[in-house]
Image (cartoon, rainbow, N blue to C red; front, top):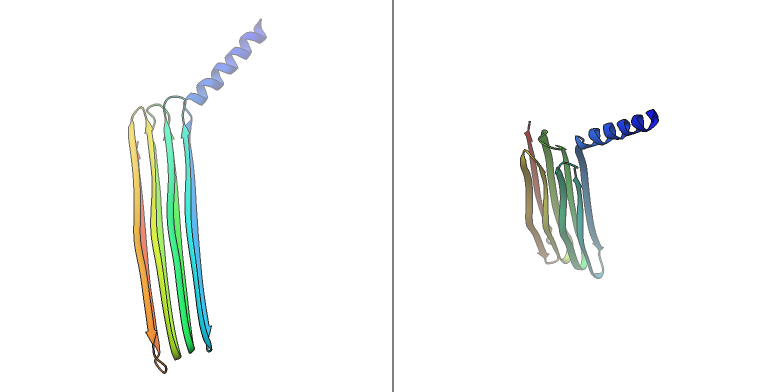
Length: 195
């Protein structure tokens, strides 16, 4: 009989301690694209295209109605083309996206806190020398990240959205030298707490 009572007490203690557990989530998303075209004399054409969709998400619920959710969605495109006749033509494209999210949500009426950052960098460089040549480059970027937290004490949300397009064009006749260089850089940071 005493073993049954002791076992019951342990189960009640374990269940009770789980009822007040915090929901803790961390999420990191890293995206990198690189595109390079190089024409060296002769009669040449080259092209390259990349399209990428990333959907990263997680969700947790607590026994007393706590909710923690994080997501990052990105749809990006990168394309470049080059043509040349006895010319030197280069296309270089880079695209980097880093998203970091962290949150702690106490169940019941316990405190909750959130932190998120989003960094987007896009760069293009076009170059032409010697003979005739032309080059084009295009980036399309859509990134949305967010997180939400809820417990009996209220709701907390954070979102960040970046949408952009970057395009570069270069054309030159024989003997002309040209360079096009463009960069976009975005950094967002958010944090909040309800203690």
